[in-house]
Structure formats: C-alpha cells, structure tokens
Image 1: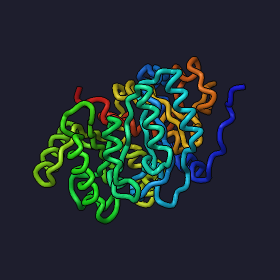
Image 2: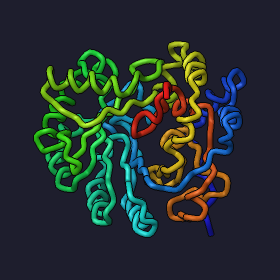
Image 3: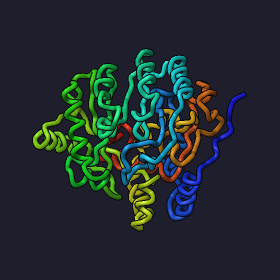
Image 4: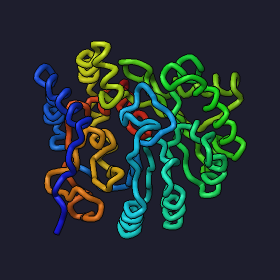
Length: 348
C-alpha cells in the first residue's frame, strides 16, 4: 500500500505557514502569475537530481538560514533512509545526488553514502559550509571528498570579513578562507572537471542578488588578490522568506515589502526553469518534497504522489504536479534562483 499520509507538521513549520497565509490576502497568489504565463499547473519534467537534506545539525548558526540549523538541532538522517536513497538511485538511474543540511558532513552516515553513490556512478554534490573542515573528526574531509571526486558547492556570504562574520559569526571568514586554501591545495577550484569548487552566496539583507556574472568576476579578483584562493563559479541565490530569515524580516518590519519586491520582479523565463521541475527533495525521515524550501515549510509532495521514499513510484513522481506557495516568488524573481545559481538574465 502506498503511503499518502503526511508527517505531522511541526510547531515551527505550522507557525511559518500561518505567517505566510496571514499576509497572502495583500499579495497576488503565485499560481495567478503561472496562469498568466501559461505555466499553470507547474509540473515536474523528470528527476535528474535527488536532493537529500540529511539533517539540521550544523556547526554554524547563520542569520539567513532557511533551515534554522545549528549545533543544538538533533534531526539527523538514519542509515536505513540512506539505504532507501541508494536503492532509488540504483533502480531509477538518477544521475545526480545533492547532499545538504545543516552541515551534511556531520551526519555519521555521510561518508558511507557518498562512497555508495559514487560506486553507482552518480555525480555527488556536497553543500559544504567550509568551516566544518576544521571540526573535530573532519580533518581528513577534504582528502575524502577529493578521493571520491565529489563536487563541492561551498556557501560564503561575501568575499570580505565584515559581511561574512556579520551573517555567520565571529572568525567564520578567516576559517572559511583556510578551508578554501585546503581545497585549492587538493586540486579543487583549478578548472579540473573532477574537482569543481563552486561558491554560493545569498544577499546580506532584504534585496535580490546582483548580476551573477559581474559578481563572479569581482569575487574571483578579490579572493585571488587578497586571499590567494581560487574557485570555479559563483552561484547567487535569493534569500527565502523561510526559517531564520523569515523571523529576521518580521523583526525588521520587512516581510511584506520583501515579498512585494520579489513579486514585482516576477520572471516567467525563470519560472520555466525552477529546480523543482527536475529535482526531488528528501528530508531526514525519508519524506518527499518538491524542493528544500517546501521541506522547511512542511509541504510534502501532493496531488497523488506518495509522500515517502520507500514508496517511490516513477510513474507518479517523475511528472508530479508541484506544490506552490507565496515563497515561490523567491525562485522566480529577477534572474531567478536555484541551488545552481541564477536561472536567467532579466535583460535577456
């Protein structure tokens, strides 16, 4: 029997849903924009990426974090869920697995899963916060990732100490630069396709990211000249009105103005390329979502698709209808936003 019973929504998820629903009457529904653009309902085009959020345990407590991760969180994916994921990767021949958190490397099953996924021939992406490389027991992390040719997407708010530490905490920039030097020394960020090193940045406030191409040029020059480090690409992402960033917006009285800003920058070309169309997101318990943002709001896949990984059905998941909400403006504003960076040039 397929499982359509959704997990109980946590108090944290319920409060976020209620907050967004409370301001919805003053804003156009996201689906209205889809309808006007001839894109309603939003449908998946297949599953090219299985994204695992393996838990909310993290060594950092970032101000903008949509996961609200931190050292005190205890949610962590168990070994049996990792095994289910490997089974789906094996049977469905999904080419890419994207591992996120929290700090995914702190999950005790992380390395075994990476080894298993690489043995299946999958491209493996590790979303690394950089400073985790200096945590106890992680001193050989860079060597492990290098040995298995794992792609690294490393988050860094800014190429400067002041902005980075303001968002992530004291000395985070210095520790992040140390980690980048370790990755460079191992061969990452030098243009070798076996060891790509991409940086990802979110704005430090309630505004959209700048032009990704221009920012990448600036970042590469500044980090090389001032810190002696290299990377391959810069991904820009809009901040989502979810988690810690939602609370920050509310505290500043900026939630509605920020959502209006996102809505006014609606880009139908970006909407046609949003990551939920080719990605399936898995939470630490094995429940399924259209994206990591829906996951943090407790919005499981719907419209007839089973909600747990153990019940994966290619006929129901590959072409599923995607669950949308007010937060989806975050992925479709301006140049668009995804785990792989901007989706479109607004001037195109």
